[in-house]
Image 1: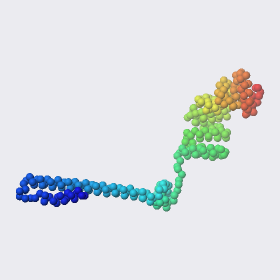
Image 2: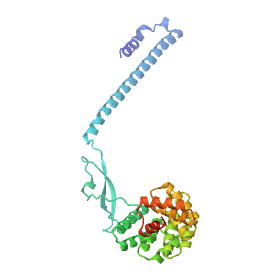
Image 3: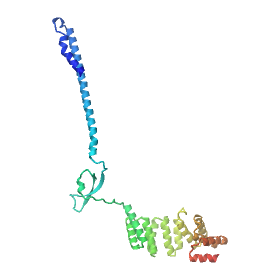
Image 4: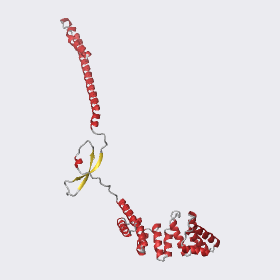
Length: 314
Protein backbone atom coordinates (compact mmCIF):
# COMPACT_ATOMS: atom_id res chain seq x y z
CA UNK A 1 0.00 0.00 0.00
CA UNK A 2 2.82 2.41 0.76
CA UNK A 3 4.35 1.74 -2.67
CA UNK A 4 1.07 2.51 -4.45
CA UNK A 5 0.63 5.79 -2.51
CA UNK A 6 4.16 6.80 -3.43
CA UNK A 7 3.50 6.22 -7.12
CA UNK A 8 0.29 8.30 -6.98
CA UNK A 9 2.14 11.21 -5.32
CA UNK A 10 4.81 11.10 -8.03
CA UNK A 11 2.13 11.28 -10.68
CA UNK A 12 0.62 14.36 -9.03
CA UNK A 13 4.04 16.10 -9.12
CA UNK A 14 4.65 15.38 -12.83
CA UNK A 15 3.46 18.76 -14.10
CA UNK A 16 5.94 20.58 -11.82
CA UNK A 17 8.87 18.31 -12.65
CA UNK A 18 8.54 18.92 -16.35
CA UNK A 19 7.48 22.58 -17.01
CA UNK A 20 5.99 23.41 -20.35
CA UNK A 21 7.94 26.55 -21.28
CA UNK A 22 8.38 27.56 -24.88
CA UNK A 23 12.06 26.64 -24.85
CA UNK A 24 11.40 23.15 -23.56
CA UNK A 25 8.42 22.09 -25.70
CA UNK A 26 10.56 20.35 -28.18
CA UNK A 27 9.44 17.01 -29.51
CA UNK A 28 12.18 15.16 -27.68
CA UNK A 29 11.15 16.50 -24.32
CA UNK A 30 7.48 15.64 -24.85
CA UNK A 31 8.34 12.06 -25.69
CA UNK A 32 10.51 11.80 -22.59
CA UNK A 33 7.78 13.16 -20.36
CA UNK A 34 5.16 10.84 -21.83
CA UNK A 35 7.45 7.82 -21.47
CA UNK A 36 8.12 8.48 -17.80
CA UNK A 37 4.42 8.92 -17.03
CA UNK A 38 3.51 5.78 -18.96
CA UNK A 39 6.01 3.65 -17.05
CA UNK A 40 4.71 4.87 -13.69
CA UNK A 41 1.08 4.23 -14.68
CA UNK A 42 1.94 0.68 -15.77
CA UNK A 43 3.82 0.14 -12.53
CA UNK A 44 0.78 1.33 -10.57
CA UNK A 45 -1.55 -1.04 -12.44
CA UNK A 46 0.76 -4.01 -11.76
CA UNK A 47 0.82 -3.22 -8.04
CA UNK A 48 -2.95 -2.88 -7.97
CA UNK A 49 -3.36 -6.29 -9.64
CA UNK A 50 -0.97 -7.92 -7.16
CA UNK A 51 -2.84 -6.34 -4.27
CA UNK A 52 -6.17 -7.65 -5.59
CA UNK A 53 -4.74 -11.18 -5.97
CA UNK A 54 -3.49 -11.14 -2.38
CA UNK A 55 -6.87 -9.98 -1.07
CA UNK A 56 -8.77 -12.71 -3.03
CA UNK A 57 -6.38 -15.42 -1.81
CA UNK A 58 -6.83 -14.29 1.77
CA UNK A 59 -10.62 -14.43 1.43
CA UNK A 60 -10.50 -18.00 0.01
CA UNK A 61 -8.24 -19.24 2.80
CA UNK A 62 -10.54 -17.69 5.38
CA UNK A 63 -13.61 -19.37 3.85
CA UNK A 64 -11.88 -22.79 3.74
CA UNK A 65 -10.93 -22.57 7.41
CA UNK A 66 -14.45 -21.55 8.37
CA UNK A 67 -16.00 -24.48 6.42
CA UNK A 68 -13.51 -26.97 7.87
CA UNK A 69 -14.34 -26.01 11.43
CA UNK A 70 -18.07 -26.08 10.72
CA UNK A 71 -18.23 -29.73 9.48
CA UNK A 72 -17.48 -31.49 12.81
CA UNK A 73 -20.20 -29.43 14.45
CA UNK A 74 -22.73 -30.75 11.96
CA UNK A 75 -21.59 -34.32 12.52
CA UNK A 76 -21.72 -33.93 16.29
CA UNK A 77 -25.27 -32.65 16.10
CA UNK A 78 -26.25 -36.06 14.77
CA UNK A 79 -25.62 -39.10 16.93
CA UNK A 80 -22.49 -41.16 16.21
CA UNK A 81 -24.54 -44.34 16.48
CA UNK A 82 -24.16 -46.49 13.38
CA UNK A 83 -27.42 -46.50 11.39
CA UNK A 84 -29.15 -49.84 11.15
CA UNK A 85 -31.22 -51.10 8.25
CA UNK A 86 -34.55 -52.73 9.04
CA UNK A 87 -37.26 -54.30 6.96
CA UNK A 88 -40.42 -52.20 7.12
CA UNK A 89 -43.74 -53.51 5.99
CA UNK A 90 -45.62 -50.96 3.86
CA UNK A 91 -48.94 -51.13 2.15
CA UNK A 92 -48.75 -50.51 -1.57
CA UNK A 93 -51.62 -48.13 -2.47
CA UNK A 94 -51.58 -49.29 -6.11
CA UNK A 95 -52.16 -52.95 -5.30
CA UNK A 96 -54.80 -54.99 -3.48
CA UNK A 97 -55.23 -54.14 0.18
CA UNK A 98 -54.02 -57.58 1.29
CA UNK A 99 -50.81 -57.36 -0.72
CA UNK A 100 -47.85 -55.74 0.98
CA UNK A 101 -44.39 -54.80 -0.13
CA UNK A 102 -41.23 -54.79 1.92
CA UNK A 103 -39.15 -51.62 1.89
CA UNK A 104 -35.81 -50.98 3.53
CA UNK A 105 -35.48 -47.87 5.64
CA UNK A 106 -32.46 -46.43 7.43
CA UNK A 107 -33.28 -46.07 11.11
CA UNK A 108 -31.38 -43.64 13.31
CA UNK A 109 -32.32 -42.75 16.90
CA UNK A 110 -31.95 -38.99 16.27
CA UNK A 111 -33.50 -38.81 12.82
CA UNK A 112 -37.27 -39.06 12.43
CA UNK A 113 -38.60 -40.79 9.32
CA UNK A 114 -42.05 -41.73 8.17
CA UNK A 115 -41.16 -45.42 8.38
CA UNK A 116 -40.75 -45.28 12.17
CA UNK A 117 -44.50 -45.10 12.48
CA UNK A 118 -44.96 -48.19 10.32
CA UNK A 119 -45.10 -51.69 11.78
CA UNK A 120 -41.62 -53.20 11.80
CA UNK A 121 -41.44 -56.81 10.66
CA UNK A 122 -38.29 -58.93 10.45
CA UNK A 123 -38.84 -61.64 7.87
CA UNK A 124 -36.88 -64.88 7.61
CA UNK A 125 -34.51 -65.16 4.63
CA UNK A 126 -35.92 -67.11 1.72
CA UNK A 127 -34.42 -70.58 1.24
CA UNK A 128 -33.19 -71.76 -2.12
CA UNK A 129 -34.79 -74.80 -3.73
CA UNK A 130 -31.83 -77.00 -2.78
CA UNK A 131 -31.95 -75.81 0.84
CA UNK A 132 -35.66 -76.57 1.00
CA UNK A 133 -35.03 -80.10 -0.29
CA UNK A 134 -32.28 -80.63 2.30
CA UNK A 135 -34.61 -79.52 5.09
CA UNK A 136 -37.32 -81.78 3.74
CA UNK A 137 -34.93 -84.75 3.61
CA UNK A 138 -33.80 -84.08 7.19
CA UNK A 139 -37.45 -84.05 8.23
CA UNK A 140 -37.94 -87.43 6.50
CA UNK A 141 -34.96 -88.93 8.37
CA UNK A 142 -36.33 -87.56 11.64
CA UNK A 143 -39.67 -89.24 10.84
CA UNK A 144 -37.86 -92.56 10.20
CA UNK A 145 -36.04 -92.27 13.52
CA UNK A 146 -39.33 -91.88 15.38
CA UNK A 147 -40.85 -94.79 13.40
CA UNK A 148 -43.24 -92.54 11.50
CA UNK A 149 -42.67 -94.29 8.18
CA UNK A 150 -45.91 -92.97 6.70
CA UNK A 151 -44.73 -89.37 7.06
CA UNK A 152 -41.23 -90.31 5.90
CA UNK A 153 -42.54 -91.92 2.72
CA UNK A 154 -44.72 -88.89 2.03
CA UNK A 155 -41.79 -86.48 2.39
CA UNK A 156 -39.42 -88.63 0.32
CA UNK A 157 -41.94 -88.88 -2.52
CA UNK A 158 -42.34 -85.09 -2.47
CA UNK A 159 -38.56 -84.70 -2.75
CA UNK A 160 -38.43 -87.09 -5.71
CA UNK A 161 -41.26 -85.18 -7.41
CA UNK A 162 -39.26 -81.94 -7.23
CA UNK A 163 -35.86 -83.57 -7.79
CA UNK A 164 -36.21 -86.87 -9.72
CA UNK A 165 -32.47 -87.60 -9.48
CA UNK A 166 -32.17 -87.13 -5.72
CA UNK A 167 -30.10 -90.18 -4.80
CA UNK A 168 -30.58 -90.06 -1.02
CA UNK A 169 -34.35 -89.86 -1.37
CA UNK A 170 -34.46 -92.89 -3.70
CA UNK A 171 -32.18 -94.97 -1.47
CA UNK A 172 -34.07 -94.07 1.71
CA UNK A 173 -37.44 -94.82 0.14
CA UNK A 174 -36.22 -98.20 -1.15
CA UNK A 175 -34.74 -99.02 2.27
CA UNK A 176 -38.07 -98.30 3.95
CA UNK A 177 -39.85 -100.61 1.51
CA UNK A 178 -37.31 -103.37 2.21
CA UNK A 179 -37.87 -102.86 5.94
CA UNK A 180 -41.60 -103.17 5.39
CA UNK A 181 -41.09 -106.34 3.30
CA UNK A 182 -42.34 -104.50 0.23
CA UNK A 183 -39.53 -106.01 -1.84
CA UNK A 184 -41.20 -105.52 -5.21
CA UNK A 185 -41.71 -101.82 -4.54
CA UNK A 186 -38.03 -101.48 -3.59
CA UNK A 187 -36.92 -103.44 -6.67
CA UNK A 188 -39.02 -101.20 -8.88
CA UNK A 189 -37.23 -98.10 -7.57
CA UNK A 190 -33.75 -99.62 -7.72
CA UNK A 191 -34.18 -101.13 -11.18
CA UNK A 192 -35.15 -97.74 -12.55
CA UNK A 193 -32.16 -96.10 -10.89
CA UNK A 194 -29.73 -98.81 -12.02
CA UNK A 195 -30.96 -98.36 -15.59
CA UNK A 196 -29.66 -94.78 -15.42
CA UNK A 197 -26.71 -95.44 -13.09
CA UNK A 198 -25.44 -98.94 -13.83
CA UNK A 199 -22.11 -98.35 -12.07
CA UNK A 200 -23.45 -96.70 -8.94
CA UNK A 201 -22.25 -98.89 -6.06
CA UNK A 202 -24.82 -97.54 -3.57
CA UNK A 203 -27.77 -98.46 -5.76
CA UNK A 204 -26.09 -101.78 -6.62
CA UNK A 205 -25.58 -102.79 -2.98
CA UNK A 206 -29.18 -102.11 -2.00
CA UNK A 207 -30.45 -103.74 -5.18
CA UNK A 208 -28.38 -106.83 -4.36
CA UNK A 209 -30.04 -107.04 -0.92
CA UNK A 210 -33.48 -107.04 -2.53
CA UNK A 211 -32.43 -109.77 -4.99
CA UNK A 212 -31.08 -111.90 -2.13
CA UNK A 213 -34.50 -111.61 -0.49
CA UNK A 214 -35.96 -112.91 -3.76
CA UNK A 215 -33.50 -115.87 -3.69
CA UNK A 216 -31.68 -114.50 -6.73
CA UNK A 217 -28.13 -114.71 -5.37
CA UNK A 218 -26.39 -115.09 -8.71
CA UNK A 219 -28.17 -112.04 -10.13
CA UNK A 220 -27.28 -110.11 -6.99
CA UNK A 221 -23.61 -111.08 -7.38
CA UNK A 222 -23.64 -110.01 -11.02
CA UNK A 223 -25.01 -106.60 -10.05
CA UNK A 224 -22.26 -106.17 -7.45
CA UNK A 225 -19.53 -107.24 -9.87
CA UNK A 226 -20.82 -104.80 -12.49
CA UNK A 227 -20.74 -101.80 -10.14
CA UNK A 228 -17.70 -102.89 -8.08
CA UNK A 229 -15.86 -99.82 -6.71
CA UNK A 230 -12.07 -99.58 -6.92
CA UNK A 231 -11.29 -98.80 -3.27
CA UNK A 232 -12.07 -101.64 -0.89
CA UNK A 233 -11.10 -99.57 2.18
CA UNK A 234 -14.01 -97.17 1.68
CA UNK A 235 -16.47 -99.91 0.72
CA UNK A 236 -15.92 -102.77 3.18
CA UNK A 237 -19.67 -103.55 3.48
CA UNK A 238 -19.96 -103.78 -0.28
CA UNK A 239 -17.06 -106.25 -0.60
CA UNK A 240 -18.19 -108.26 2.46
CA UNK A 241 -21.55 -108.78 0.72
CA UNK A 242 -19.73 -109.84 -2.45
CA UNK A 243 -17.61 -112.35 -0.51
CA UNK A 244 -20.67 -113.91 1.15
CA UNK A 245 -22.34 -114.25 -2.28
CA UNK A 246 -19.20 -115.88 -3.67
CA UNK A 247 -19.47 -118.43 -0.83
CA UNK A 248 -23.12 -119.08 -1.73
CA UNK A 249 -22.16 -119.56 -5.37
CA UNK A 250 -19.32 -121.88 -4.26
CA UNK A 251 -16.67 -119.59 -5.74
CA UNK A 252 -14.38 -120.11 -2.73
CA UNK A 253 -11.24 -118.72 -4.32
CA UNK A 254 -12.73 -115.23 -4.88
CA UNK A 255 -14.40 -115.38 -1.46
CA UNK A 256 -11.04 -116.14 0.20
CA UNK A 257 -9.30 -113.32 -1.67
CA UNK A 258 -11.84 -110.74 -0.58
CA UNK A 259 -11.94 -111.92 3.05
CA UNK A 260 -8.16 -111.76 3.30
CA UNK A 261 -8.22 -108.16 2.04
CA UNK A 262 -10.96 -107.24 4.49
CA UNK A 263 -9.17 -108.82 7.48
CA UNK A 264 -6.04 -106.89 6.56
CA UNK A 265 -8.08 -103.69 7.02
CA UNK A 266 -9.81 -104.83 10.24
CA UNK A 267 -8.44 -107.92 12.01
CA UNK A 268 -11.09 -107.68 14.75
CA UNK A 269 -14.09 -108.64 12.61
CA UNK A 270 -15.09 -112.18 13.60
CA UNK A 271 -17.50 -112.61 10.66
CA UNK A 272 -14.71 -112.07 8.16
CA UNK A 273 -12.49 -114.60 9.96
CA UNK A 274 -15.36 -117.10 9.88
CA UNK A 275 -15.89 -116.49 6.16
CA UNK A 276 -12.18 -116.98 5.47
CA UNK A 277 -12.26 -120.21 7.52
CA UNK A 278 -15.21 -121.55 5.48
CA UNK A 279 -13.50 -120.68 2.18
CA UNK A 280 -10.26 -122.36 3.25
CA UNK A 281 -12.18 -125.40 4.53
CA UNK A 282 -13.96 -125.80 1.19
CA UNK A 283 -10.66 -125.40 -0.65
CA UNK A 284 -9.19 -128.23 1.45
CA UNK A 285 -6.85 -125.92 3.36
CA UNK A 286 -7.57 -127.50 6.74
CA UNK A 287 -4.83 -125.89 8.80
CA UNK A 288 -5.56 -122.39 7.46
CA UNK A 289 -9.27 -122.97 8.04
CA UNK A 290 -8.63 -124.04 11.64
CA UNK A 291 -6.51 -120.92 12.30
CA UNK A 292 -9.24 -118.69 10.87
CA UNK A 293 -11.97 -120.38 12.93
CA UNK A 294 -9.85 -120.04 16.07
CA UNK A 295 -9.46 -116.28 15.45
CA UNK A 296 -13.23 -115.96 14.95
CA UNK A 297 -13.90 -117.79 18.24
CA UNK A 298 -11.45 -115.61 20.18
CA UNK A 299 -13.06 -112.39 18.93
CA UNK A 300 -16.60 -113.75 19.47
CA UNK A 301 -19.85 -111.94 18.65
CA UNK A 302 -20.85 -114.63 16.13
CA UNK A 303 -24.43 -115.54 15.19
CA UNK A 304 -25.55 -118.84 16.86
CA UNK A 305 -25.76 -120.80 13.59
CA UNK A 306 -22.28 -119.74 12.50
CA UNK A 307 -20.88 -120.40 15.96
CA UNK A 308 -22.30 -123.95 15.82
CA UNK A 309 -20.72 -124.50 12.37
CA UNK A 310 -17.28 -123.41 13.65
CA UNK A 311 -17.55 -125.58 16.75
CA UNK A 312 -18.26 -128.62 14.62
CA UNK A 313 -15.39 -127.78 12.25
CA UNK A 314 -12.92 -127.49 15.11
